[in-house]
Length: 92
Image (tube, rainbow, N blue to C red; front, side, top):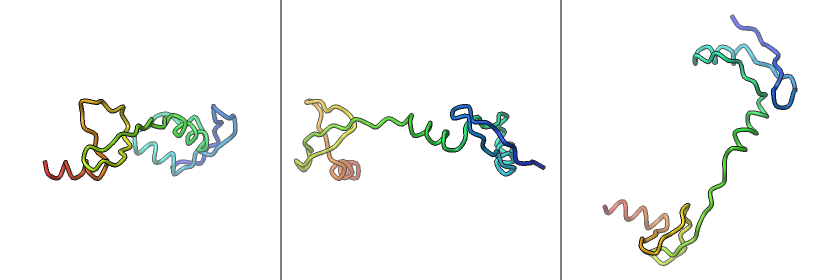
């Protein structure tokens, strides 16, 4: 039903093949537009948009160890390391 197509990547300008299998997949999913980027440019775009989370260190209120957390700790709220947090959730 489908035949391989050669497309031009809009980012790098290189040719890439839009295979018959990929076209079938796109049709199955209801996608109407052909891909505009080659695989390496798509991957670079995906990975480039991921921001590394800033991590903060705090003293665990359960065991006194170091807790690495993805938010700035406040003095009025306890912070737990992963293990103590899991125990807190188990015990309700």
